[in-house]
Image (cartoon, rainbow, N blue to C red; front, side):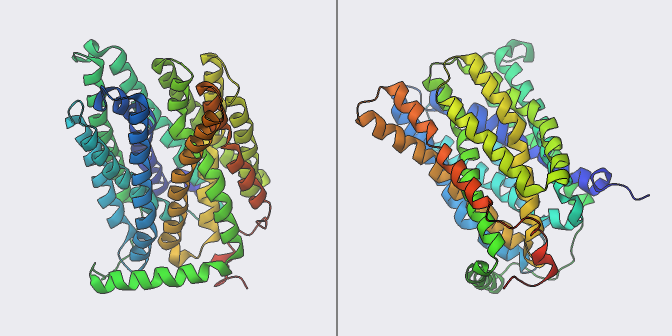
Length: 435
């Protein structure tokens, strides 16, 4: 009896990568960087100005990554192996995560630059890790393997984040003088954690032999391939519809991830409570991501994603009316039920739709779509809230109106997803392209 795909060593190494690099998403991106940027690196600045700086930093990182992602994917598909790029971006992300340790108080410009470079490493590594899914798991097992990897990410990232939170709450227990020093060491721990658990994938996953070398001709061919794919992709009806739907609903997902802490602070909730809520999301997300892998085998990926979108829509509407920290905890728990599932099934669904020989290139588009969504979502929240305030709404009310605007993304994504033909996964791997 053959061993299930999610129990062999190459898929285990694949899951370990998510275990390692998810620490950046939890400890740095969602947790300590927003708080530290406002309270330490922007100390003495007006709260509105520091928020604007943080928004500009996130937007800049997203824009750079969105522009680079499809080109990197095209270069990889020209012949350079994906694992070479995965290792390169792992080293970039881990190194610059560690570099946040050295940024001095009040130096927000340097902190922003280091964060942008670390984010480039994070998303670039995800691009090539995602594209390896088609080489690691057979078609029918990709949803489960992807879900297992996301579940491992929630558990691994959550465990390190829990340790980091403990360090900030009881710094003397770890030989540290202040909570600020504990946060600095937390940034360092993320880079080390990411590097350690990111290395097994280099040894235990398939390595396609290639004699290609990175040169100007290869880069030129990559741009030509990219231009051809942009022209050709409109012929892949289901892929195009799925990408449009993904662009909208993942916009909502990313916006909630990046804006949840800021939203809670705007409502007057304590930072310690918000960090606790993030931990709740992480540890509920572990079994929930595995559950969605099982659910997809019963009802299909597309329908499972649509159910997750409905839950996100309800959460967004609920968030606009919540009053207490307990309600924030409840919201975090509900998000934990669907966050890993919707990301894992989106990755697996896309992997099953695309041509195998163009996996890195197409995942470049996939990540580009996700990164452009990460730019638009926070901007929509900010503009909607600002307009509401200009029309006479109080600050808290304007903030609630701003967050409620995210529901438009979930509604649009759900509607577009209804146009994707169920069972279309795998069609591009069975024929060149759809008519």
